[in-house]
Image (cartoon, rainbow, N blue to C red; front, side, top):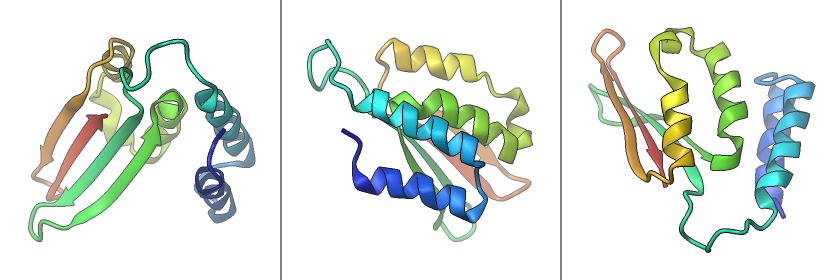
Length: 123
């Protein structure tokens, strides 16, 4: 079952206007699917999709987002709306890495213009 904290995070995103109520409902539904036990062996499949954005000047994290792997497909679609500069990123490749069980850092990009480093992990 999804944790109360995960549900509250989605509801707060709806409340703040970051996502629509319809998107929130899709996330909650996907979260319920994620929480159902899988037939695979425990601990062998990646469980988290982590995104870190670090300021290059200060070294401080600007963004730290942890998403259950089962929500990544929905999250990518919503994230593209907020970050049009990701247009050249091959999200299909990320999804393939998740499906194949790849774990660790899958993206490490330095944006000199904005002074940011973006790292994506599958854990």
